[in-house]
Image (cartoon, rainbow, N blue to C red; front, side):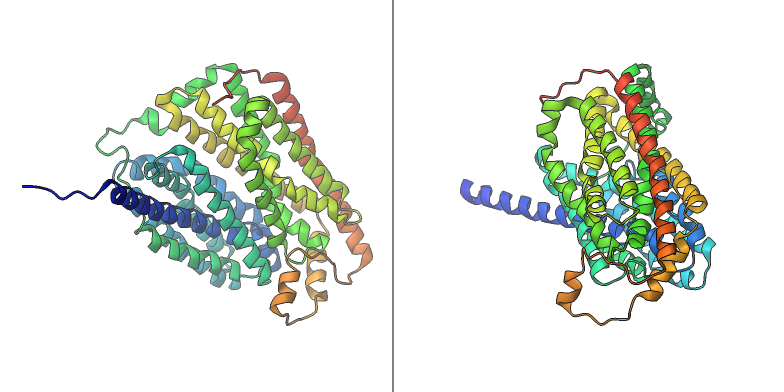
Length: 455
């Protein structure tokens, strides 16, 4: 029996079409995944404050690092062994989306306990998908070098979410949770149409050493790697100030659409992500991470000294530094961890790094940041209420809304109250600047490791 074979040209065209379709689906997956997160997380604190739930800001932001610490267990126990990755991801987004859609109701009824539980439930569903999406992507592309071109769509998704929230004037409104919930439900359905990705460890015995990353922890015997992990964890304490508090600060400083303004940071992230290979070869691990740490110091100093008189170029520059702050630290850190770890435990090491930075470090950071916010920013609540009360009710055209995406301008408020609040903000930002500077000095003095940077 003879089998018909397509001519080589036709076969190549069909393969290219399949690859193009796969890449399109993976790009949409990345876009929607970070759109979900970006829709609500950037201005969460400002929104809770505007709706009478100032007291749960720390707990609300703390759900993300708690979920980041638990996520490796979910992946190791379920996704890696029993079910296809795209199906697990679909179910998680459907469950997480349903919980996020319920948030506005419980904020309206001032049920703070239920709101915190819903945030925790949503993040417990969301955080494992960060690893699942990477698994799906790497399993269905022909070359790992194509991954950055896919991952950048996640950053674009975050930017678009922030622009939409700002454009619609939702930075302080409950609609951000509905937007996140509905987009999560859409992505949950879309996941079932992603390329089939069987569980990578199906049939393999469950090893507690792997589940609890014990082999990765054994690398702490290397002094340089131990310094790297310790400093990476500690630097995330001041890092949490930016993610948790900046939205409130920008609103107090007169930014009309804080969510949109903060997308400038993600825009710079795209640029510096593309430049990482160039700088990595020339600067190496130590100097790239050190530059990132010093960029955090500079950012907080700009926020501090720009507070008194609302010096806008300082605040915009502080936001734009996000590309260096985030990419040079996190991306370089993942590269260093991958190059340092033996091939057999690379996955464990990456999981350990996420656990310590996005988990332990960020959790401690949110507790410190919001604890200090409550103690130091005593005029913040009064200023926020005064700004909202002084804003005139307006019906704006599309062009007018578009023109306000990055507009800054305070309405007429009590000048004494404004000066007092901005003075408190100036002092507030000095602590994370000092912490980041101290950790940078420790890293500079204690980290010595030669890692290949030519590949």
